[in-house]
Length: 265
Ligand SMILES: Nc1ncnc2c1ncn2[C@@H]1O[C@H](COP(=O)(O)OP(=O)(O)OP(=O)(O)O)[C@@H](O)[C@H]1O
Image (cartoon, rainbow, N blue to C red; front, side, top):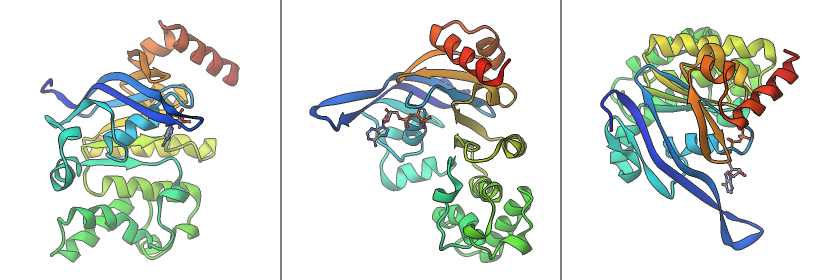
């Protein structure tokens, strides 16, 4: 484990059972190695089914791995259990693709943003401080606490809901954010706005980010480094300029050609 890395993923592998064949397992990730430095934003790109979300979900503890190690702040979190793991990984937050699904409809916006702090138990005896942090987190994403605190998710637009997702993720000063296609449900005018906001927040909070997307164009301005995934294997990595302007692997070349065609570049 290199000291400068916040996250160091080594030999990560995962298979799922094939529903059409009870004895067969299908490999989804095959020996994935990559690191994330402090304050770095990594773009994890690849076509649908490449395994991008599975990597994010394993790091966030929502999925198990078959083999490999994930060192986070020097500890292999795949080998930690229960409260110990929770303590080490409490500074990892996830932003999901679908703001409709990721926010409980029965909780107010204030309760939703407070939830990560409540789970961490840090402000158990300091309610006033907890609500102050929630209020600040809402203001940071330009949602007025007075207007939004007591509303419910269905009373918000898709863009506002995704801002609540950002406030929830940043309220506890995370060191690593895993943003899984955070803009794919938004229309194109709101996409850049949300990514700009996420970029400002990660800089202000000194947060590293894994930005999962199938949209290479979005990574150009927001990522320090790209990792290209094809069927569970990393085929290429480098700065967005290196990868997009001068792709080395045939898979990356075809991904970029498809993007150029789509955008008529
Ligand atoms: N719980 C599961 N059970 C069985 N197979 C799964 C499960 N979760 C994911 N898979 C399979 O693993 C592969 C990788 O899925 P994953 O969601 O990681 O891909 P992705 O690159 O994030 O795709 P997308 O961009 O469409 O979200 C896919 O073939 C998917 O069908």
